[in-house]
Image 1 (cartoon, one colour):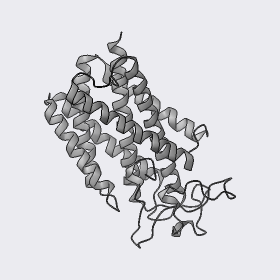
Image 2 (tube, rainbow, N blue to C red):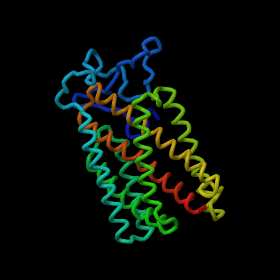
Image 3 (cartoon, rainbow, N blue to C red):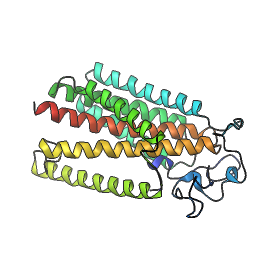
Length: 281
């Protein structure tokens, strides 16, 4: 995996067939080469980095290039559909099986989009809607177990997102090649551990290895939230480089998709964590 999530791992090709967004070395790293070599914006064939302007340094925005406003608008659309879907799933009392069916549809749409070389707004918005339905059903189920957990999880997700952004902008989080490697390895290990826990739960009953309950569940939940924050920081880096080096405007859809996936991850981990904490009161 070369980036914060699979959305960015395939890079980008514009209408002229050019690859990548950003091949320019980062500040202070000329002696070591570009530390963001895993970044799809950092490919050496990038036509925008061959003497092109740094658009963060006062250069006028180029027509057809991604801007921060584009990213904000697309992200607002995807998150808005997540909220609409969640409200529908909550208000209509959909049975859990339909909720998990919506999750499967969302996963299929996300996988298809991930392996497409160009973003498809229909796939991305469809993913957001079905993922929202799933979140609505799951959130209502958790609310029965721990009243108020979804609201607390939303507030927690917002706090993590804002805190991650502040830490990234102030340099407390430095997204470099080592950061990518460590987070990717940790995410793979976390996913495999959760799969093992799920298998034990399916065949042995209960909570499997106990990774989602008690003190151990709290620790796992904190790790999950921290991983989500790390993914979010890498999303910020992808977006910053895309805007800085003139990524094609449609790439803002991929940016919105990546941010939405990271925020959904954080929300689900926060929801589990809050429910465990409330259940232990």
